[in-house]
Image 1 (tube, rainbow, N blue to C red):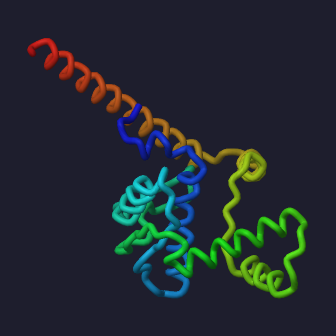
Image 2 (image 1 turned 90 degrees about the vertical axis):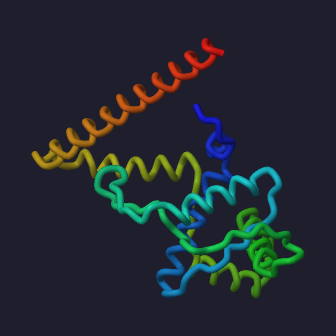
Length: 195
């Protein structure tokens, strides 16, 4: 349950890939040792307020390193101190360039001719870009590899203790969330009854 539209619609494809887009930009900026100053995104009326909200959330997240899925260390913060701008492709050469590359890539996937120069451009993109696939097949392949590695060796005593700690923390968080929810509901009922 949430009252926030950006959370409710966070499962839509445009929103699901957005954090990964920001992380890709952040990763490239770290490789080149250059800060991200401005991110210009194509205008999308349905999502633009949510995109801004998510950019604000991720660029201002706490810098803490957390454990994600057990062993993986992860920070929610990325592209810090950057500004996020929504623009039309008419006003942005960068957006026009990306639109052209995406159009060429679509033609390439459809097996349509694109010419040698366009092929060279796509090859440059393939050689230098980060790709993030979002499909049941890709997620299934990742899970198969992850589970195969996980089940290929016996759990050590350390693995078992780490799992117990994670379960205990999750249960403590669940209990606290239930208590907070009950308190909030009680306060709402009390307020409604008194007025």
